[in-house]
Length: 333
Image (cartoon, rainbow, N blue to C red; front, side, top):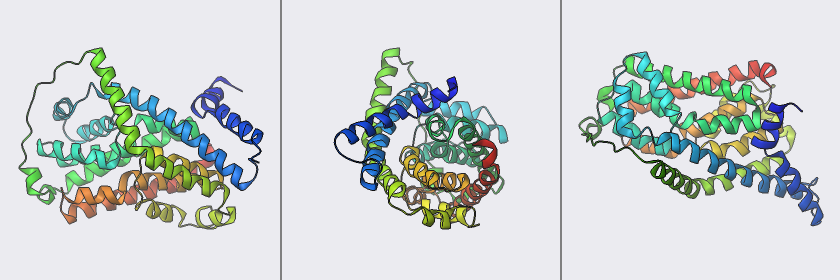
């Protein structure tokens, strides 16, 4: 085993933990090769693995994020114009460990502050879809090639989507209370190292409380898919023979509400059942970017026409990305 394989399997993937849990369950008389035992092993292993990774990643990401409070982010974005501003906004979205619902208040604040609409939408798309946490988690499941390509195409969707919205001049489609909002330029006091560590820990505890239920729910679904749903069902719906697999996966992801941490176990189980890579990633993007609760929240800030255009751009982008991954799957896995 090479060094990178060891890092991916034993450190990021924590395969040693899976083996340990399997041994303990077998010692307790539970056959992990059966459906019940396999489901219990999958559930315990994935919950522990995701929560450990979640805690470590959120702590590190939040520490980085402490250098980019909203006012500083606004000032950074204000220095750029055109597609360059969209690129910076998309990149800044990667250092915000938020789900789509958590990103919307920041989007509203940036829009109220007078930043170009396309720039704020680039941030809104990239923040839930692509972050440093997703890069590490995707590496732990799919390998570094898939993770890197996923992040790149996610950023492309964010930049292209924001640029298209900017070109359409839809500022009038933003609700009046957002357009007329005032942003208070309060000076940002420099945080001490202790302050940043405290902030990072608070983000860990707050995020864990917020997403734990969704992680449990996601792992539970993953355990059912992994051990109870017949493989031929998944193959019929989501594998090569069905040209609409990517579209089905994208649409199925929209009603759900989860972040990348809740999606990973479901995606892992689907991939293990033989689902195509593009189908799995389309499902993840649909859940994280276009969840129904976040669209309901966003509707409070923008009018139906702009909301529809936003959903259409994201949906088309996700579907194209899904088919792209299906084509290149043999080269990156």
